[in-house]
Image 1 (cartoon, rainbow, N blue to C red):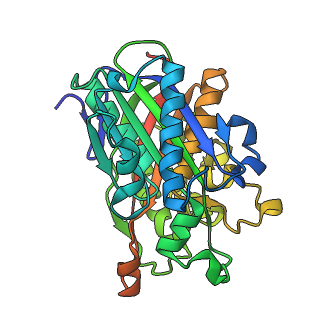
Image 2 (image 1 turned 180 degrees about the vertical axis):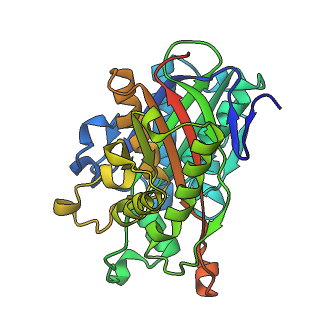
Length: 338
């Protein structure tokens, strides 16, 4: 198993190249600090559709079209698609991919789905099973609130630890040949349950999973945080990212300014009233496919460790009093093949 490292990690034998990436975001995201990094933003939160769920499907269709245009490819050039969202039975993804004749894997890793889809697409290309593969995820604030918490019309009070589900989507097209950033290695997350039961405190529920995956990554590859220009978690928000710093600090490791969180980056906490920051599949997807990979192509980042974090709860499990298990997958992205 020459491509396996340590307990939980892998090396891509033929590093898959990011041929193209695209991001789409909603009205509130377009008012945030990353407004200029998205390929397309909409002031219409329904994206011209009749429901929030249909809006999410439309976002996926749009971001796929943008990524294909950048790569100068057609849908039929894709050998596989790894897609997911937060809706029940992943209907946002299945409806967006219907009738386009692309072999499709539907994924659910909650808010870790962008990292999960990227990792699996990378394995399929690096292993020679696909020439080109798609990783795509999305989320929508209104559809997520209706499914996991309360319909917006209810007017429920948000707790200080709550986060704001991002209305956004991101798509990455990987290929075996070409120029651009590439996937080098990855660490597959294990499911960690810290006993948190509050669905309005996702950051605290996911932070231990992020810590475990990052620690495993450093151990498996015998590396330190300083090896990366930027280590970014998916959507721990202000509280969760502070917990990760605290957990590493207890082990004598200081992450410093090289560690950031997509949920903190995407909104201005002071002016946008998002409490602890952003969350949702679309949070890490739109930040990765807009700001982070954009900075890498501009030469501002040489090596990035992208860590998608997900809280694996359902409305039913919450109603039955279950705690919230979480997972984190980490993918190392380099500006060029070594």
